[in-house]
Image (cartoon, rainbow, N blue to C red; front, side, top):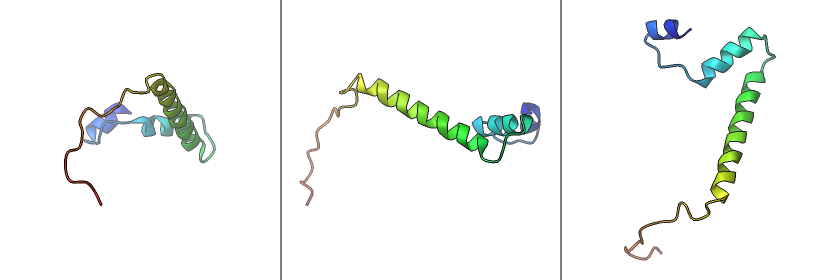
Length: 71
């Protein structure tokens, strides 16, 4: 699969190609790969949020705005 993509000058495959291949190989029902993708994305977001809660001040600003006061 990678050789075919490369020979056609297409962009490097991402998770969409992998999920399409799994869906085709295992004859998954319509919408199954989208559900897998969405579930994985949500789990990743939740894991990231949990990690960030441990470092509440990690992204504090390091500069102060000194321009005119917004109206």
